[in-house]
Image 1 (cartoon, rainbow, N blue to C red):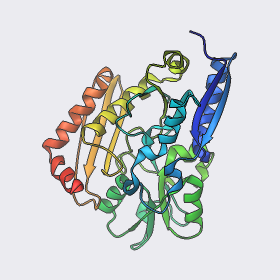
Image 2: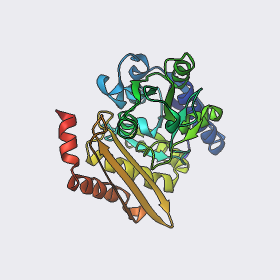
Image 3: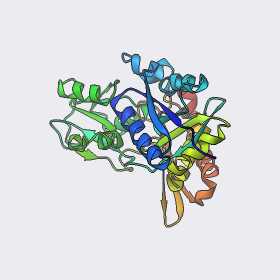
Length: 309
């Protein structure tokens, strides 16, 4: 099945989203020399509403809805997403056709004055847009002040540089991709801050049933990353994971076995349950569901009930 003569990639217009789209554009162009690969830049609702936490305005789907409409209307063939921004349940009629090799999946500590979380004095203001990060910070550093931080990567860094925050926590992958590694004072270990499901990985979304495009993007899929991300997402999905739930899920493949860790917590960090397991990478989604069931036996249901109240 040959590729179409023109391939259109839908993307958000933030600098990081465009980097991701250009990265995929380059790979598709080299794989399909007979095709013109272009990017359709779009502004989404998630990019427009910056004065409230994401959990309050509708969640991660706000970053991808307009891109999906463009695909439905035939204006684009595929969309490129940061996997941590993709809702755990895909909308009907759409499919994740490829998950590319992962960049550093961990969280980064960014500050102009301090080298790490342990160096922050009591009362220091830390910015994050993530309930997951907030719950971890509140649990381990109750003396810090946690403030919401919205906006694209450049906006967040400007707010830090303007002195609105003493430090901010960002995904290391975004900083690395934009050549901003020098802003990272320290990378948090998975033990310090368990990453979000899908963090650091890119996903390619298609209209379900678009067999020609599925064949075009298939070479972009990295099997090891895909197994890990599928396990993480299945874990999150089984716990009703969304940006309203402080939840971390992170998998790696070590010695041929998939090692999945996960936690769920209250936003104030006062209640947290965590667990881990190992298994066959081919059983990725089953392992994710199994870990979620283990957390339920340890008290996750009580935490989820409080979050829903």
